[in-house]
Amino acid sequence: MRVSWRQRIRFALAELLYGSGRSRRRVAPALRRRRPHVVYVLGLHRVLSPEQERQAHSLPGMVMRAPTFARLLEFLVQNFRVLSLDEFLSGDFEPRDGRPACLITFDDGWRDNYTVAFPLLQQYRLPATIFLATGFIGTDRTFWPEQLIRAWPDPVLRERIRQRAATAGGTAHKELEALIESLKHRPAARREEILQPLAETVGGANGDALLSWEEAAEMARAGIRFGSHTVTHPLLTYEDEATVRYELSVSRQQIEAKLQQPVRAFAYPNGDWNPQVRQRVQDAGFECAFTVRSGVHRADDDPLTVRRFLFHEGCVVGRDGNFSAAVTRFRLAWGR
Ligand SMILES: [Zn+2]
Image (cartoon, rainbow, N blue to C red; front, side, top):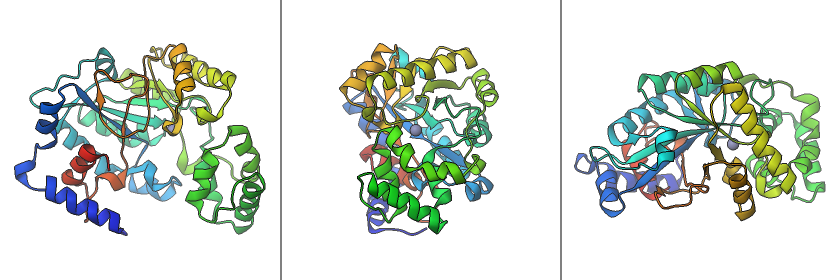
């Protein structure tokens, strides 16, 4: 693992503040005293086995390794009262035996949520909520960043896309991550024009597959709850009102029809919201909606802009590359 100076400082602070046995339960009591009714909402994306990791094309910020995820669940069982979505919606955030409330969520609906995360959740008897981008569920398609990452080694294709992005008004990003970030912040139709060459050459989801409806239904029967994450995963703040209404209502209808469970929760793609989008989410009848703004959610906070701690491998491992309770506590206490 390459360790940056920022990470070194984070590790040092984490060990200093949360590394010793003495401060084992430090996060919980400190917060219980100050603000009793809070929930730590965790937001994850993919959980990968070593084999799947070799075949996946997601950015590091999307991925947690299976052994790390197992250790994280063990940590949550020991230190938190893990809520179901229904308990979260009931507003009962009371700590149990000194353990504050937490909620486990996944965005997008990746197939590895079924093959890797679901068996581990069952093993630890933990509830979780998965937010589905319904247009991808049960298809052989995947998200455009994974397609772009897969296409990137091809110099001809790479240059074509770079030029199209530059012509369309952006800068000619050389770095893949910078290009992805700039492409995110455009209306979907404009982005699709730029990425047209991908559609011609990169087919199928391969190592970046999303759930089938059958897999989702099996998890639903076992108690996993599902929420909406739109149909096509646009950043809603860049779309017109009709598109936003469509994305919200159709994704909800699809999940309710396929999984026979009421859809009460929504997660904003990329966490992006503004007052207009928030209002549309309320109009569509969602009872809660999740952002990616870091921090705890308090009982009296707006349920339609719930804060979450985004979690990936790099947030929870220590210097040795293995799960670290101290680093995880540091992230939950400071949001970094
Ligand atoms: Zn997403």
